[in-house]
Image (cartoon, rainbow, N blue to C red; front, top):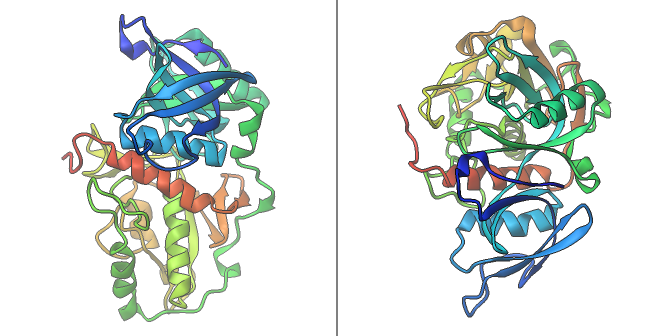
Length: 356
């Protein structure tokens, strides 16, 4: 990988950003700094060349977690470094550029197939970043996109080959007709209770537990939240499936999106159950991140200012799906690993929500 400078760091020329894979942590592989207050000794591999760095004992919890978790999951990182000391760690989005659009006023809007986020490269962007994104869009090459907590793009690099398996592999046909997904019906009167049962799993603001669902972090992770909710429902012997809305123009008001009062994605996925009746009218969507209670499919779609023609359906086992209906299942531990990341990212927001 390349040594780059965070453009947002101004003239602090001692700081560099290194991107690569963490191959060793000592002491480790998991947990806080050592018992005597020493930092973590970290080996960062850049183009297969090891570089020895130190994460100091006063590093924040997100940086400690990001380092040890990146070692466990083999996810690449960006490390901001000052004379061999790690100042900050970021874990990028890894995937293929699925849409690439240059706007007339200069910015580039793009999406990556592993994330529902909508990314924007500002008009004053580095031409190198635009070239990498365009090549990925044309060739299907895998990239890693680093963003700050507001979603602003900081870096784009080709992903190291060790991280290629983090990009979605659409190996199955996931999309099915609603009528083909047979679910046991639940009573309409029971649906609000199911919603509240899921909503009680919400993470407390700023203090996530290891088992909570970060409903107050709508920025990304809808597929992990939906998957976890389906798993919880299954343990209660309630059959559920998933509805996927693919629309880059969807938007909904929220108090939980940092720096703005609304949010949208390239896609959004939610769990649903079936009640009496037929067709879409029998669907009840359970989405505590966006709604105060269960909603009909029509209310879900119109709430996001979209159209039912953008909806696809899948069984609960599908973890990721593309607009063309191709899909992938969960890798072992993937949902829990993803939720860990989103919980920590939510906890690092300062200030914490609500924002509106």
